[in-house]
Amino acid sequence: MKTLVTGAAGFIGAHTTLRLLQEGHEVVGLDNFNDYYDPQLKEARVRWVRETAGDFPLYRIDLEDEYGLEQLFAAHRPEAVINLAAQAGVRYSLDNPRAYLNSNLAGFLNLLEACRRHPVKHLIFASSSSVYGANHCTPYAEQHNTDHPLSLYAASKKANELMAHSYSHLFGIPATGLRFFTVYGPWGRPDMSPMLFANAISSGQPLKLFNHGEHQRDFTYIDDIVEGLVRLLPQPPEADQHWDREQPNPSTSMAPWRLYNIGGSRPVHLRSYVEMLAGLLGQQAELQLLPLQPGDVINTCASSSALEQAIGFAPCTSLEQGLARFVEWFRNYYLINLPLPGESSRSAAAPEGVA
Image 1 (tube, one colour):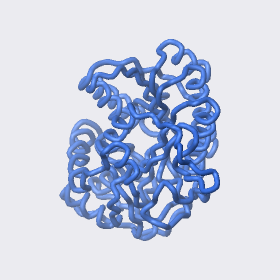
Image 2 (cartoon, rainbow, N blue to C red):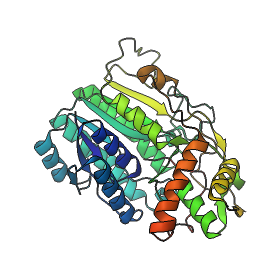
Image 3 (cartoon, one colour):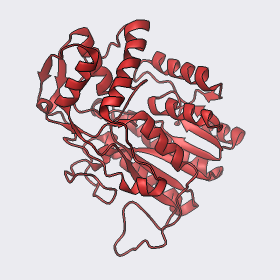
Image 4 (cartoon, one colour):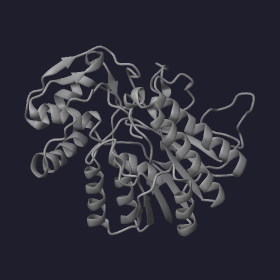
């Protein structure tokens, strides 16, 4: 299947592109290589994919570039789209809200319009566990309320789910949204907790834990995320024939649209997570306990039973296994080849979502 992967130089995008190429899919990549974090890491990911699985066309354009996106679709006619491009980060949205309006809303609209003009068999798009917001009823299930986001980032992801539904209803675009839960692993983002914490521990800097370290997070290893994406790709949703307008299920529809959680379903206390990471690095962690930050969700835990029923798979990599693989990569990439990432001063509360 010819698949367009947006955000192909990003953390999840690079891993997904690699897996698709290895399985014989034709992949077209798109990424704007912005400077939200070091573009050199994005370039390195692309080199890693090409050296491991072969070359693929990669367009350096932005989803906000409506004309460029139209030209790409017209030239390549992708059969499927995996949309992993977005302005990420919860805390960044407090200071730079327009970045989320431009990328996550205007950019996603351009993508939907392109899928409308050049129909695809399946659009898979990244959502986030952040959409559950003020809902404290865990484990989160797709039927739970998501009407109270705690950050603009979360609101933009909720908006993506609604925008995709409207296009599925109006134009028959089969669309599946995946709510990612704290994705981590090799080649991860420098603004997320594994990299921030590993950097602080390795360089002997204080490690900032907001909410006094009392968060819990449902960590999901990158390979499990990619497995879910690849299995879903050939299974576009169909209209739910049992959908009831009087008692609507928020995760299905009379349109070809579906939402799934994808998470490890094994939440970990943040202090235990830090202890495990420090042990793997062979160093002590100096903790700086700080109050809860605006926009943070206190605890997350996914119910992935709906996804497992649909594709016969749910995330299964233990945190011990996943962190060990991350630390091996971190040592090779940062402690041998490059200087430590200059991100230790950025705030690290509860780890954020991915997309």
